[in-house]
Length: 359
Image 1 (cartoon, rainbow, N blue to C red):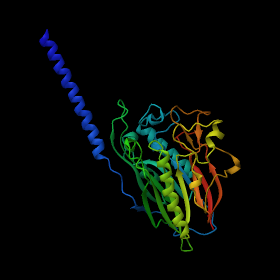
Image 2: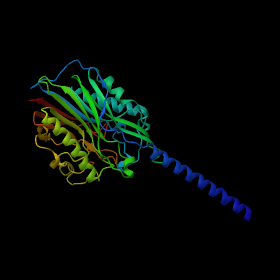
Image 3: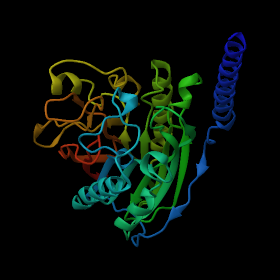
């Protein structure tokens, strides 16, 4: 009897030791494989546009749209928001969501497009190359792609791991792109860096007829790995960069997913109360330099949300907020800006469309 007990104890200890080695080995794999992409990386430009330069006093349309890596149908909830799922329903669902997003944006007939959360090769989206899908959808546009998430295989949640991810920001222009660059945002140095994206923004240059340049900033700032210090550092870096270009006489249009309450009061106005869910802090308007403004004079004075929280499936009346939008330099006239109501059918974000002129 004693021998049986001793044998059982030895087996149990051996199993625990093996499990411990697996866990330690996995943690070492995640830690040792972690590296940040360098700052100031020149991006390849996929040519396609035939127009050589932007014109003064001509009306153009730019759209920003976070595609949510093709996962966010209305019933999708995300584990990092307090929901359940870590992956899209299926590859077919991913393809449908990306196609619906592309078609929605295409119907606006934009000259420029800023996409966020465009997966290239990720477990969570069944390894669909969404940038290739968008390139096919927007033939006749030039484009660039900046990596903002390149992670090791994450084994959480245990029963459906998030897996390995490679995702990007994609910028499209129907005017020739002269160059594009990826800029690395400062991010947390704590353990949360393994959960946050390799945050960045891209700067895409379009020639203007007067010899200056139109700079398109495509932004996706921190949410999950953010803190007051990180948020301030990211916005300070972005604003200083834009200010330097403006002082050279260039035109600046900055758009994307800022992961802040973009108007500063949309949480209260849309929901009747303030509940930032721990991430959507008011936009730090005090950091916006002279000569720049947020475009929040919405068409028809209609305040529509651009983002839903994904702790529960979406239905009208759930918590929503505005986190997506545009900032422009004062040599760019914002003619009108509109948040598009999509019912969050294909993404947890809605597109924002802005018409503008270069003065």
